[in-house]
Length: 344
Ligand code: XMP
Image (cartoon, rainbow, N blue to C red; front, side, top):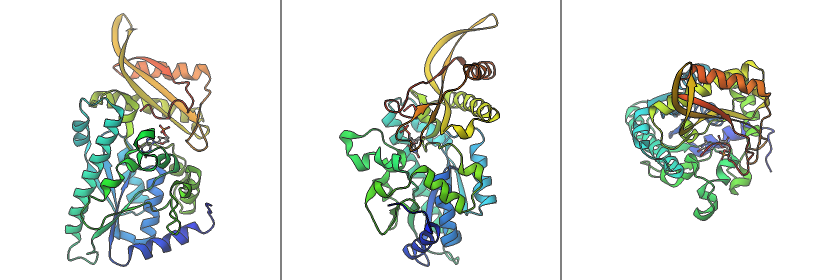
């Protein structure tokens, strides 16, 4: 029951009617295709009354935050506020190794940041033509995120809490009549839940219709909690830095080999167990990097990508040589199910 057709025009009309002439809308943007599409639709519908909030949670990929700023602000003309919250997130995550606890901490920290920004933005808008209240919160969510999260299935059958749906009830905590607003991906007229939520390929198609650059539209998905759910165990700034560097090497090599568009999602994660290695004539005790690359249509099930062994060996060598603190590199062969795409 999902039709592309004139979706963009209908959605813009729907947003305008829903939001009205004065209210402000805020929304988190990660630089990924889902939130960028949502933000672009909002900008086309209500202009600067939509304020995108880019939160640096300290767990983003290398240079990612800079790219978010460039794409959203400069290329798409979106009214963007950035919040540097890396230290806040990492301090709250310190010493926590349980995957669900990590996700919940990240979800609630995002909400704390949004709440603070909503209050600040309302104050700032006082006595300006945009003097409305922050009444809506934009949330772009995909089908797999929704179906796998607590809100739809109940606690007993939770696969894992996605920070953006698991944190849902708390969104209403934000001052003013804050409402969860599944903007782009659910048709307002028909509130049937997940059946009405778009899949990734549909969101990409909307992105193209909105004129978003192909390189952004085709980006591999990146989870809101970021590198934190790609580190097995507790997250430290050092571990994030190692995973980030390894990931950057892996993704660049995938791009150089012309494989990026054949893979649905790839990354390098980090196992916090350590392994012994020899570098030159020195013995090292370093982390294990886990390479993951999958092919999938819907992100509900996935197969691991078949690289040439020689490619993987080159990646392993490059990571061991270039990233201090790594002693070993492995490739994850698990399909989904049983393995999820992220490590946690
Ligand atoms: P899993 O690991 O559940 O991932 O097989 C399925 C897809 O969802 C992405 N993912 C998330 N996206 N917030 C997000 O926005 C999250 O908390 C989250 N967890 C997983 C994952 O990257 C993959 O594309």
